[in-house]
Length: 281
Image (tube, rainbow, N blue to C red):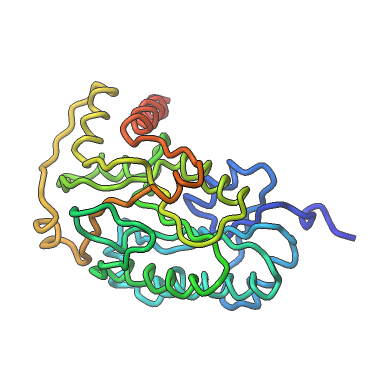
């Protein structure tokens, strides 16, 4: 007889961090696994225990406080960003389960075009990005729904939230980038699961925005004054261990499926309005 903690759920989520908890709050029939995965056997045991239809992997190392950490903690980064996704993919294949992997779009660099899912990645300037790139290549050989996001942002203060990070920085890179509003990530990922999609998808909001524009919105909505220095990407590279990806991703593939992709500035204003309310509590 299956106990209450072991009853079937539709979504099993690996990764008890920022995005794992967001998915768990958003999806109605979900359970958040808190086990550490050191082998495909570990993943297989947990998947069999819950017997969920979709296995969502939100495990990944982004570094604390940022990706420079990954340069000095390569084994932990390799384990979280490459080995764990592979272990889960192997288990899902053996158990015939649908896997969703939350990956990264920080594998491109440049502003001459919007990068599509078919473009060959051109950025390996950080250990973080290299592990994400290799894991994407490996998972592409499995029947996986692979979500690429960039610099997640939402309406609740959190050290993983881009807005929280920007408000604590003294130097701000002024360069157009794609961003992912977390609420839109959750909705779009669910739509893709509902449509039983597999393959790679850029899940970012439509149109690029600069970090300066984000902070201007914050100043307008909050009424607060901010002090920061604007710098270019090359200047940032001189003061960090790891180079940063700066790019714009295409949302055309999502839109061709009939999935609505909100425009970044409108979505951002809602985010920041919520963020300011949360700050005042």
